[in-house]
Length: 364
Image (cartoon, rainbow, N blue to C red; front, side, top):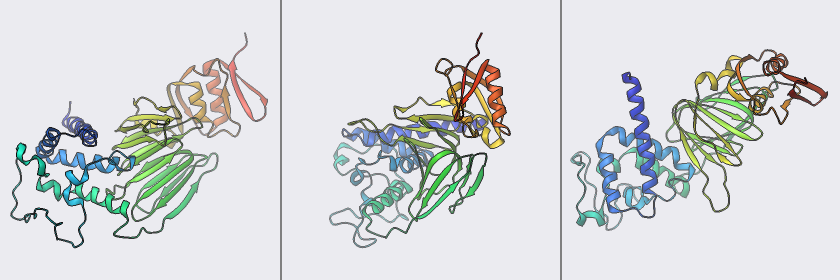
């Protein structure tokens, strides 16, 4: 394995560890041993601290941090009336200039009741992120700026590249509609229909979210593709880390959430999240090159993609819906592409309905 691949594997492993710590820290049964182990893990390296910061920021809007014991883990996240003045009865904080970096050793049992995180964490970006969230939720320190809303659409056969105010770039596929709502504190978008590829400018203090069907997508700065279909929404990541969750779930259950990294994809539908699968930039971004690439793709899924380009949509008969298709097809002439798919699978096209083309087995 080459050095770059080793570094990438190590980085992903740290992100997984950070996610595990988030799950443990929000547990109702957080023990003193958990706290000591967490402190030791954070003390091991700056990379661990960075991974935790990124995951804390990334998952904040998904509700994962809603049960964090912030008053214990981040004592200084509680605002005071005057800047620089400690709360009553709280131990004074030593000057950073004279403080020394703590060792990974765990605090003694006698110290557990007044346990604090190391100085570098209390003054670090994790606290800043949590503090920022607390201020935003409480709306105590500043008024929210008005939203800047804009809608972008494409017609059938049209694609469009859109530059957003934050420096992000979105490529809209044919027959798509995107709404953006930006303010000083948030970057919210909604894909109402179609497909879009996002190259998001990194802003750790202002996460970027996308609502698409039954899926919520949240990132800090990365590259990913969203394909919204009538029955599901598919998310493919080509760079960075993306958090995907359900918008809702069955009564009494928490919505599911999953973390995607480079070359991973997932589908979200009314029945929940699919298993995470492998993908590639070629597969995720074929439409940006004017092509459709299928690799053992069920016919009904292939037609869902092709229908974005067809003036008259196509469907597969029930007995051939799951027949798989492989190959690369050009999008310059979608109707001809439909004929090529039918020929490749030995199917006939029924055009008796002017509003639908039905693919069915050829008669003997």
